[in-house]
Length: 265
Image (tube, rainbow, N blue to C red; front, side, top):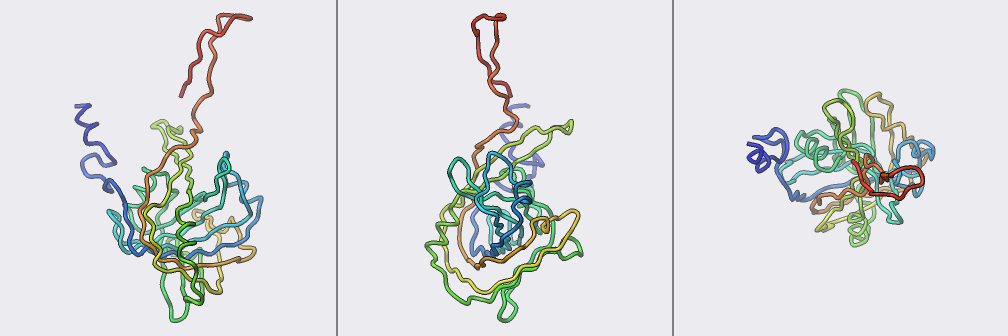
């Protein structure tokens, strides 16, 4: 019976998982990204070591996903922080809000995406690209940009999309302690950017007890872009285990030689 379960186990529930195995391909994925300057000390309280901050900026994202393998049609919104890891520049995914259960379950269980249920939208209203995020009935984010005012270099935007991304994956034990606490790295793969544009932009964030996007306040909007791409969401690798114990030396006695070294955890 144990082997039977191992052979079929992929995700929960055992006999009917909330999401299918990958790969996960996205067609016409639409990004609206507003980069803004924020409070450096607020960022330091959020970004976990061994990641390092590169500058006091945040990328606020609204992402429309009309065609995604296994996950369907949905929209998400959240905050991404530029970081470096052992000299490699990338992005730390701070918090994400979306309106579809399979990518919430799959994102959290597979990679460790910090996803919660909310109601984001990304639409074009006449001459303006508009992104909004509501948590329940409460508006917590509004972003606007002039629609396709100036084209951007699609090859440059493709290179930015394949840069590494980092996540803090936390899964609790049945006693409430952390069973898994890992820094995960993943990449977007097979990226084709179909179009990219920029324009004048604005961003407003509002306080909420359970969706604290405003804890990284907007001090100055730096840039904005609208990107449409096809891509594959690659699986991740663990680059740091916060629960791993250091090597433990076993001694015969004071002043004696080390007998063995073991790695626990």
